[in-house]
Amino acid sequence: MTFVDQKFQLKLIEFIEVCKDGYAILDADDRLMGCNLAFCDIFYMDMALMQGIRFDDLMRQSYSRRKGIRIETNDIEQWLQEAHQKRRHNPFRLFEVDLLDGRWFLFSEQVLDSGEMLIQAKEITKQKVLEHQLNSKVATLSELALTDELTKVANRRSFVESVDTELARCQRQHKPSALLLLDLDFFKSVNDTYGHQAGDEILKATAVRFKKALREYDIVGRIGGEEFAVFLSETTPKTALQVAERIRSLLADYPMKAGSVELCMTTSIGVAFCQGQSSFEALYIEADSALYQAKRNGRNRVELYRMLDE
Ligand SMILES: Nc1nc2c(ncn2[C@@H]2O[C@H](COP(=O)(O)OP(=O)(O)OP(=O)(O)O)[C@@H](O)[C@H]2O)c(=O)[nH]1
Image 1 (cartoon, rainbow, N blue to C red):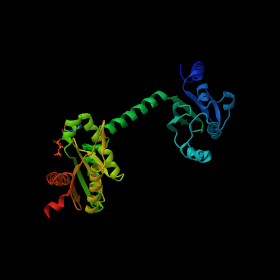
Image 2: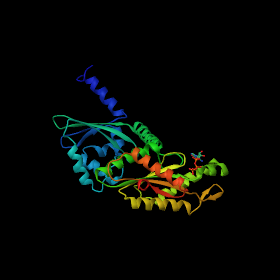
Image 3: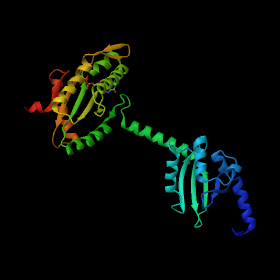
Image 4: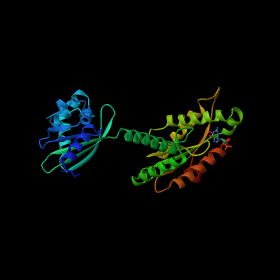
């Protein structure tokens, strides 16, 4: 049997009538010549009401009755104008459509030289749900890969990556920046005295305190056990020292809860300042050396690297 065979044509029509995919044909004036039940079902319309309906009116009805395809606009006429800019410009077009009832369809529009258009709509809800689940899993995994699980600040790898990018931007724009390395003092004794869980509580509360003392776009990371780092872009040494001092006193002057006890923790802070060309590694070495100095000079204090040479 071939397409010209009448028996075959009748069989084809029989299949299309019961098919789960929607089929419709529009004439060259964009009026619906006919469709199957599955197509009516997409628009929640009776077959009788579909006959002869113009494409624009079908869309207007969907929009005003809030049934059928999801049309996100405040101005349906404007939406239709935009739709017409995409329609009928190519003989074939494929696009995804979501319905207000949560279903998704893959629509195709095939236009003949005569201007008549065949629309096919295949349900793809299952695939879209899987795609959505996969995307949110990927987002969660990337979040996990970038975040320190305990404190929820950036982990070492993502901190270094973000600082590299931000440092390069500051250098391109000839803006100063600073790196702070912060290490809790005598943290081992918290674990030894109150237990590891209390130590974890302190680390979490410390990260919260740091964020409180900083601007939203400052970068905070946990780069070792009880060692944190902060990158301050577009910041002069004077301001960097003020910020470091603010963090130091925010920790030292207010106790933090760790299980059933409240503890006052102190932190030593090393600050490295960058005005010209530098790398994260070079800044880190300088800040680490300033931090070492802060520990040696009695802890609970801030040291700026440049001052060491002066
Ligand atoms: N609770 C907890 N402890 C950690 C974690 N990571 C590292 N530590 C502990 O942090 C302590 C760090 O001890 P030290 O390096 O001796 O430093 P400190 O006691 O803070 O002494 P100073 O830095 O010299 O002031 C060790 O006991 C580690 O076991 C963590 O994720 N949770």
